[in-house]
Length: 394
Image (cartoon, rainbow, N blue to C red; front, top):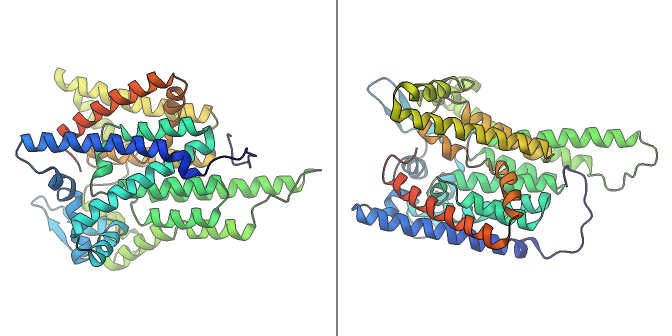
């Protein structure tokens, strides 16, 4: 399947049953990462659980959960770090978990992350299975699990929650469930700024669907009985931007700076969109000395690989929904002037970019693909432990 057209399938097992091997494999990879992190942290006299739940952005989310918005830190250079930069869905869930259970806000955030990571894995499988079949779905989930910064999927961060909502919204579009797609897109928009990528995907798919339907109306002999009701599609498209737009407008009202107030908040964190200029300068600066030049070459290779995989998806006629979503995620991550060390985790939600690799892996013999995944899982576990015990996020 290469577009949004309806596909006639033979009867298959329920989706979650087909996804079971992928979820078990995903859980095994994540368990390995946590075990290696625990051992590495213990050897350094640190708490792995503290690293996962009470450092960096995790602290900002728990402060929002416990104290609400309004907290800010003024740095000596004049920058203002406001917690208004953090979207509210994860803190809301942390507050709910704290209210309903004995868990602290940090504990609730960790539980939400673990559950959301499984939901994200299931959503990634659902999308890949819908487009390419269950074997590619299995490989896509495992590749997402063994990303070098995959340990973030187990942190009290919002990446797993966002990816889960985004993946299931995309799946809803692919299967014609427009109201569900819009509602999930709205929730994704309450999770991270990159929620606009899900909105763009839903809207693009909706417009394409309208155009195609209009074309069939003028095609002799065309069948119209399988068309999606216009009202459901329109409702889904209307719901999609409500989360992101609602929060951004609320921040503008809260700060008294109007619709662009959220951009001012991000500017206080030195975050902005400059078309990749700052990132290009950051890479270029790596070539001022020999040791750092190797890092510069690695960055160029990594960005080139991402672009090549995206172009491969275009040439392979991935559904327009996935192409738009992935393109926006890549553009926002690579062309933002944010902290450059955070870019790998900002790219994590762009899971459709892994589908060409998943297809290649799926074509290998099962023993070889298992060996590849096992090797990558070990490397990712060791790197994740090293990373979090060193510079780590944000």
